[in-house]
Image (tube, rainbow, N blue to C red; front, top):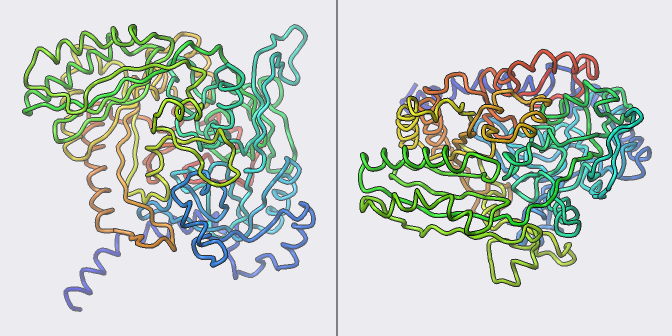
Length: 581
């Protein structure tokens, strides 16, 4: 065997167990058929289903590979709204050694819960794997599978505000709440437009406007202001869901309460197909704003002092319901600050930062390479594209397709995520005791050592330490890992490359770089979690290869979730990567 052949064999060997494991997952250890296998549905079988669902079944295609749609696809492939409208694409292109975006065998463009119920019953009978997709943002690959029936809820995108909602089955005297009914196919921009821009209220949703409301909530669901308003799961009041037996159920704290609880953060697509959600809405704060800047240190020693100071400042001034979002730490002695605030005037927000700004100004070893600024706007305009356009602000961009809803906007920074090839992605909740004076220096050391391997972000809104007692109580009544209640932040360490959609000109799947990125992320994670061994992870933003994933995602809630799974889906009709089974 020559040297090149030997090297190729050595590189391939570690992948073999992984390939076998993933293939077993794809077929459900034999529960689901693959195309070409004995018993795979015939064309007549598929046509029978098509008739039952009113002709809404079709064969999804990658529009970049279809001559009839290629020109349009090339014109709009950087538009998340366009990608979300293509059942043959997903918002992420691939994940190293894990999955590649692949069209399903068939797609049902469902318009109501009965469509879903019919398809679930048919798929169980024909042993066809089901994939559920709303927004198509799953990093774990749950939005696609080659030999599957895709239950696509995009057309189920209604949003309806209600002033006095009482859950079905509630007893006499139950309190009525201001709420919003949201179809499973709605994106958060649909909800924000109706609830905030038009309705003048607040609903807790995702930062990325094209994320689907249902999958977000199933995974737990953090927004920029979760320390103030909680998680998507903790704000869920009721859901309509199709279970594995084909029944359409309305579940809440009074009807099928264990299933309802499981839907609140128990993992997207594991317990049924959500077709409608009802969320609590909140009074809208007067203002929502941002604080941003980039700070560099001239030496390693100065950077260590800076990291300690910014963490103290966060602990003392920002770890409260007014503040959320991110600080990024980089190996070139750089900190990027990108925080969001609510319920404060510009002067109050600036005052919260002033002690830190004064500290930096007094020390020449630090430089604002991107000047620090604070600015708020009336909260009602937070997702109002017209407002940004009127004021010449370019960080909100429209859905540029003819006929697109005028309110459809996405953040300019999110465009680069379309089709991304994830090299590695992992997360860890960091407990609040690390911010105490006696533990702060080990935390600083871990952050610096980790950032030298791979830069990463602390998402302060994705840990609930510092939230109000009411917010914590609601979050405690969800299926999420209870560690989130005491976490001051979620560390996300990730890297990736440009779009690898098949058919995209110039697309290159750089596996050498991916392997290097994967190694850097794993080294960074190992260094950071020395001060938080066994840290939990956030289901929706986590490692495809997460170790002890059940414990990481759900902690002490695993047994209760497993019991709900046995009750409502004993045959594992609904199975997702790293889900409850």
